Length: 90
Ligand SMILES: [Ca+2]
Ligand SMILES: [Ca+2]
Image: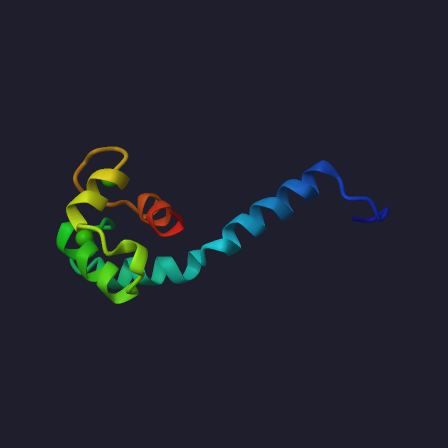
């Protein structure tokens, strides 16, 4: 913003940063790592259940199987970090 105007690129950066701040990505990654107890980089059903319970989000009191089905977008039966983020952002 050298000339006092916001360039398109800067605007994109600002927008992306705002979007990410809605969901605290660092915090979510910590939670994700913490509950990935077998350290395989994904959350299986049991790990997801524990993570959701710890977060205690009322909007996530849905059945774990339902959530898994809804957010497991690549249908591999486990939750990758990007799927986890979508779940938290929903
Ligand atoms: Ca795991
Ligand atoms: Ca998946």
